[in-house]
Image (cartoon, rainbow, N blue to C red):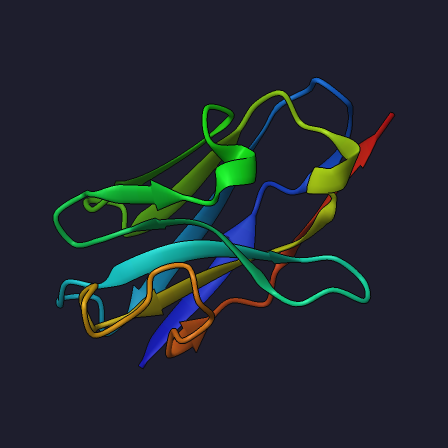
Length: 125
């Protein structure tokens, strides 16, 4: 069992930056695929960025060049650096993890086994 706890959300103006963190605990001695998702009211959960156990990252088109996913394995923490934020980035952001590697898992689809509770990001114009 893996527990995920997100932090770092908040309210910023357009053009601002935030860094989200996701602390993992529990059965963390395996390699996991990890990802960030977001969900705005009335919309489906959307994959934002994912990283495989080798550190290969993938992004949805709307955040390429603005968001960066990274991980600190020593701290069991996943990060999402978000720059040039826009109002359309406003959503609840969720961290997700799964022991399956890409190929058995579509990295930007909400097929992950473990989920955090989310952290809210609000961007004002």
